[in-house]
Image (cartoon, rainbow, N blue to C red):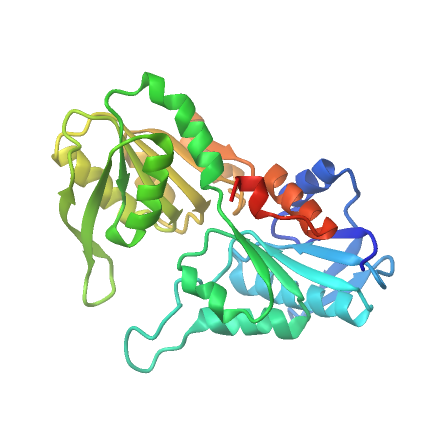
Amino acid sequence: MYGDIKLFAGSSTPELAQRVADYLGIPLERVDLIEFPNENLFVRLHRSVRGQDVYIIQTTSRPVHRNLMELLIMLQTVRLDSAARITAVVPYLCYARSDKKDQPRVPITARLVADMIQVAGADRYITFDLHAGQIQGFFSIPGDVLTAFHLLRDYVQGLIPQLHRPVVVSVDLGFAKKARNFAEALGLPIAFVEKRRLMDGSGTEVLSVVGDVAGRDVILVDDEVDTAGSVTNAYRAVKQHGARDVYLAFVHPVFSDPAIDRLSALDLKRIITTDTVPIPEAKRARLGDRLVVLTIAEMLGEVIRRAHEGRSVGALFNE
């Protein structure tokens, strides 16, 4: 039905895109991405993609609006060049937390982003670990919502023999279901940090720890770390309840200020994450050897290959 795989990289994740291309054994297609003095963006393909199966890899982390517009313009560019099928590969989807009207007179921006991706020309999408599952319903095009917790699970599994009575702890109750699945996959008990968001929206306060963490090594889990406020509160809570060493595992290293300051101040034995969002070298250096970044490149490359060949993606994860 489609021609060859044509893989494009936006400016947000060139290293990840190159690793995916290396896994697939194909080159990254060349494209000019130009920003004019008035901050307008211009995209020009070096070769035609008429009749081809196009994949555009672009995460929508900081700078969010530049990266989002770049993705949209690239999608329209290959659409107007008559690509047979276009897949938006967005490892980290921006505005995913704005998924409902939880107060009067506010938008559902995650739905708007989904609409824009479709209108720009995407036939399909691939993303990782959405903040809320219902965001899949905002898209009327098919897609693959993957999870990088398979990678985190395998890494943590290798740590377990050296841990003392380890327990998985969800940073908050909103992540409880995914944390429970993670704990079950590792064969470990689960505990939860209960928190409440302050009415002025300025942050959260920890109310209690549900479960036994006293005298145990703790593996804190979450989907993303933005400012690290929730992680800091959870760390202090489990320590106050008698936890021994604390490890942190999460998918998206958004690391908005003051996340690095907060994480640097915590005695975390290991900070385990992925490359869905690129981490600047200066921030990596602040966290030192404690930081472990697992790459999603091979998983993403295999999903792209299976999507192109019309084979099951779920079978890759025994689903």
